[in-house]
Image (cartoon, rainbow, N blue to C red; front, top):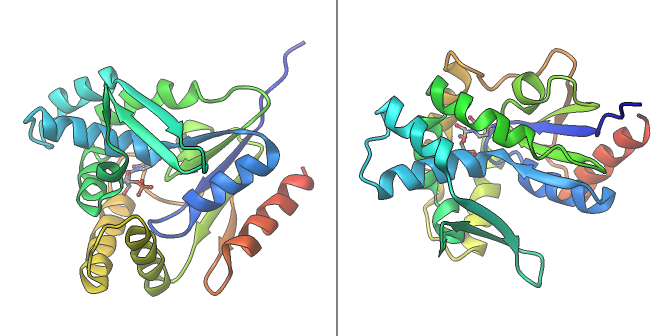
Length: 224
Ligand code: C5P
């Protein structure tokens, strides 16, 4: 008998709250979590550290294939990310790393290099996968596909708060501009653009608390 490990795919633009919601949903269900954006961020970071220009497609794809990374959590449940032996948790979350991630994410060979690594996260009892193309490319037969969005102003404010909470100082105006550029690049790229899967449920979280969004997602899971 073959059993399929269920996948809950949560896609959406930057600052839509998908990272936080995905983590809470995974915790509530006891499922594994895939933060696919972190893989693109780590690829960009690793390339930058090796002095490889982010538009050198072949060299960046090689970096993506060979990524030596580890995801961990602190006692309080907060994340910890390792690149080889180095703790890069803060570096990974910087907006400059997000911009680099969005540049390398437009390279088809990088996406191909990361595909199987992402699919390997699908393990029992289930997976919550957060990204841009979870429902369209990586897990097209996911049990539930959600496209989580929010107004651009609210997304910028959420990101701003998130970075401040991590001790990273950045102006709201600069962040709004960065997010706009990143969203446009992610939506207009030819490979795996940011777009809802035809069978995704759209959830506009503007004005909703994280708790309310998480509750809605869990209700949809319960309907499966
Ligand atoms: O979600 P996060 O902000 O960490 O993603 C960083 C960048 O990685 C995104 O702007 C996007 O360009 C890229 N990405 C992607 N596909 C995914 C996840 C992230 O292209 N599944």
